[in-house]
Image 1 (cartoon, rainbow, N blue to C red):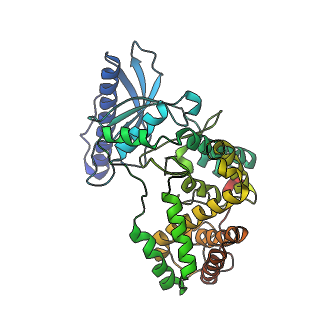
Image 2 (image 1 turned 90 degrees about the horizontal axis):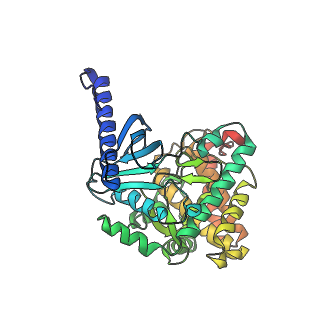
Length: 393
């Protein structure tokens, strides 16, 4: 591939760097495929897929191969090793290895065709120009969006069920690539920081009985029960809606942890995503039912409605608590909130937490969550409710 880097000016420099990154990704892909199959393989017509993480992501066409490779492939190239912390290349490579070892009907992601730790490259099955879950949520077809959400919940359940009990395998694969096992991404500092942020911004002290419930939620997230693989990045733009199911992409933060941490997103739909909005009444309950149907064979305790409700509420509490700690300090509480803002999201999520905690008789959580929601609403205006995704408006 010939890359023109003769342009001048800021735009030219940026374009030249992008072309060089794409050329490097294609070269790394050709190299690992040639070693994998023992014969030269040429890739052409690269298309930048604009990955949001540290990898260069490229779709390319196979033009010279004596093997039964697909016509197009996706290459993810991580040119730089991280200065510190977990290596996203190692996390993603091991995540795909874990799934590629499963039967095709249990593989909730593209197939890994080749990878190499020296070139820091992955070559993946290309699922084509398939709509994402985000596309469905922002279209104007509520039935299609509902089907996609239920398919996502089922796929998440199958992902958890198929990887339950595989933590030792995951960690062994990770050690081979030199990566440390990564479990809980949130440190003690963040947990301990939240009460002071709520006190400072809202003037509400967190009572001891409520903090005891937060501690219980933390213990639940770290316990040996319900552990399975998690993509961690559960954003709707990282999920492809295929004809058969939803497929998960981007495992840069993939790890084994409590599946209930992921299940919190069934009640707080995609809460970690900056553009998260709300779902209509009954949708979350239907998603929980779809997820439970897939995992109950692995974790029979979740067949009990009371056990499931309590476990989900603890996970919901932890997710709201962490997001509050991450974001409340920087939110603008001096003006009325727009219905698509993070301010409105926090009001809605604390209000929903109060309701769900009341259902399972977590009185301390219900009462404190209601106080926080009311204090936020008093500052942000009477219409500080999170808007629905466009498909449901």
